[in-house]
Image 1: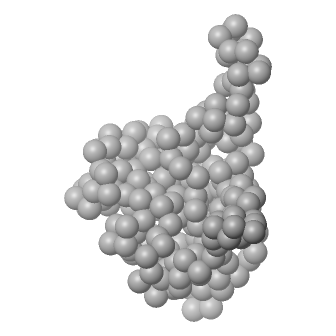
Image 2 (image 1 turned 180 degrees about the vertical axis):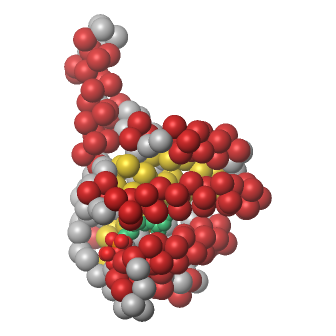
Length: 244
Ligand code: FPP
């Protein structure tokens, strides 16, 4: 394993449906298998020193899927969070749900609160589960909060800096992702962490999410380790070349 481990990895877990279809099984079967991959990825992060993991469990656009699939995903989310809470706690994982919770049933909202409370002392890995999440929604809700503060007189418009915005989006307190992974062969961001991904290294692979194992995760980390992150500077500036 390489030494240059990303502090924060964000993942779009794509390909569950196709994984199931290729086995002549219904799509929900792929989502159930996908949960096993989530469990494996969390363990991988804990064991390899990744400190933050953000996964896209349900996008604000996923409501458009067939009703049956939406309700399967809801019950899978609920069951998994209840079932895994203790194990996550024991592994030192703190869980946070990011997204518009108001779209979920009261039962599910209560489950979110419970797991966040139960795991809040976890300090090895911070797991953010994006549910009913959209990057544009996140920026919009931050704008609304800040506009309200301006209207009430508590904030000058000029005081709205990038830092203030970063502290108003739902991932506040979590550093921006170093590495973005999308499985399943599509090469797009799909309205994931739009603000947070500005300088993130992007990694796309064809592996379908249920097949994304430790070896596949290691390959992504290796690709990350081989890159030079410049943040707008020149390569020579970073390597200390005096003629840069
Ligand atoms: C994308 O595959 C996957 C999703 C929309 C849902 C991801 C959810 C899980 C892995 C399980 C629930 C998560 C937790 C944290 C318990 P797709 O259905 O778009 O696949 P396709 O592109 O092959 O159709």
